[in-house]
Structures are given as C-alpha cells and as structure tokens.
Length: 133
Image (tube, rainbow, N blue to C red; front, side):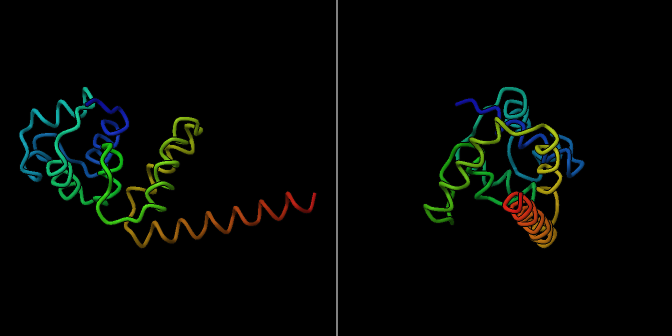
C-alpha cells in the first residue's frame, strides 16, 4: 500500500524533531530501509511498526495510524469520522494554512490546546462579523 500523506507526515515529524532517518530507525527499532521506503515511496508498514514509529516521533498514535490509513485504536467512531473528513479536506486547503497546521502539530499537547482556543475565538469573531453585515 502506498500513501503520500503518510510519507509527508513521517518526514515532517522526523525533521521537526531534527532526527536523521537512521536515528529514527534506531529509536523506533525498525530497519532504516523501511523509513526510506516510507518517506520516498509512501510505503505503509504493518500497524505495529506504525505504532513504533509514532512512539519514536513522540506523536499521537491514533493520528499516526489514521494518517497511515489504519483505523485508530482509542478514538470513537464519531471522532474518527471527523478526523477522516479533516484529512480529506486537507487536499483543498491553502498552502499557508497547511504550513501553520504543521507548526501547530509540532507543539506540545498543552500548546496545541491553547492554539486551538485562540483559533476558535478568532473564528467566533469572524462569524459574528459576518452575521452583522
């Protein structure tokens, strides 16, 4: 199975952590050739290897599983469908917004929550302005 979204996800997360492919392979206990196949060709390994890579990258395992094309472990059906819809919408998203989202993903969980609160507040202001026009 090939998945370009997965390929980009792993590459961005790895570079965000300033890791070489070899170092990530060592941390995730997978063969370095797997990481080359993942980043270059979008190769998707078995779920257990995806989970190892997620842990080595210190990122959300469910998000990683979803990006790789697997059903996440710990999220409900509704949240899963919402996340799936967001990834589908990613293709139509503005490049600047994609870059901001990548930056937000590299933040700690607490920083991500704060960013989400600020964005939500801004969106509420925009909606109010639209209603007032």
